[in-house]
Image 1: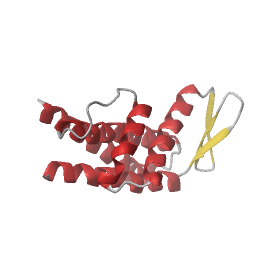
Image 2: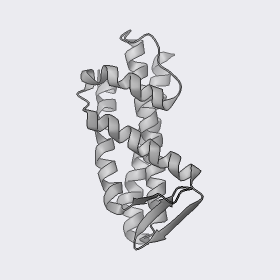
Image 3: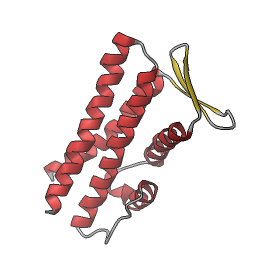
Image 4: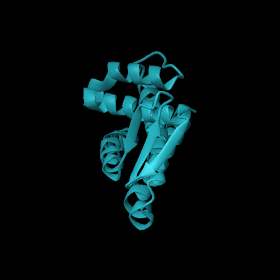
Length: 156
């Protein structure tokens, strides 16, 4: 049963990663619609949530941790404690927090708009967060680190 859940988490992580990658490198290059950038970030966030939970689930199966929390922010904190097992750097952990923060800001945002190939999220106090295609490509490459870890879990 534990391996079924692990496999399901890995499949979902890879699926959302592939969707985000396709949107970034194929759909965006054809459509040039900055609204796609938020969809890329949302898919990457879903991918990373599944990847983090898969890693923690694997750690629990192997009895290196006794449990892990259900809230994603807390999962990230637990991931920090086992990060050395996967050669994860502080920047990798910060990437997870950043991408999740962006999705949460978007959900709470009263205003969003596009301007000059940028997707802009405005907070209720009009603090602006911009997303560009370069940001999306950077996020894709940072997420690849976690996808590679999942491939190692499958093969171990």
